[in-house]
Length: 149
Figure 1: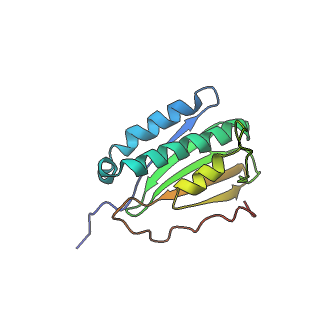
Figure 2: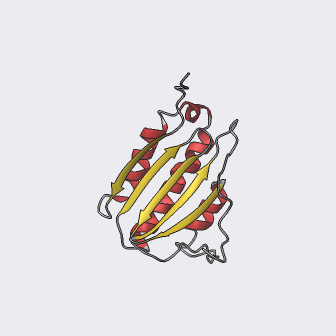
Figure 3: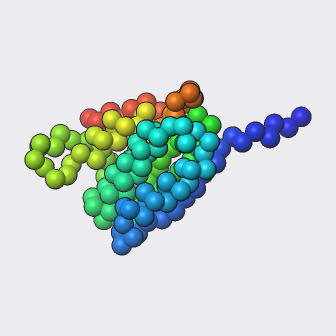
């Protein structure tokens, strides 16, 4: 007998520098609405949308690159992945209290259940995992070591 239960679903979209972070957030919000858990987990949805903003901003500002955003739900974790053209790994850093930037990866680290980056031939991909309330993470990667990434 074949199990027809949905195991994974995903969406992908490119966001050019000219299109902006707002478009990425709006696109992600629309797709999150199709996930059953999203209506009962507004805090997780907010965390995902903030992370989408931070990762697209990093791609545009630091990598001077378009951002390819992929959302993947694997029945235990929502993976938020952003690819850019820079080979430089993301670097969490301590921003001065009056600094206007420099907190993006610290925010992602605080909001996501885990995150990591993957170097690729054409840049890198940063992926954050969000486990909604009532779900168990299976195979989700651990937190990235800020000293290495």
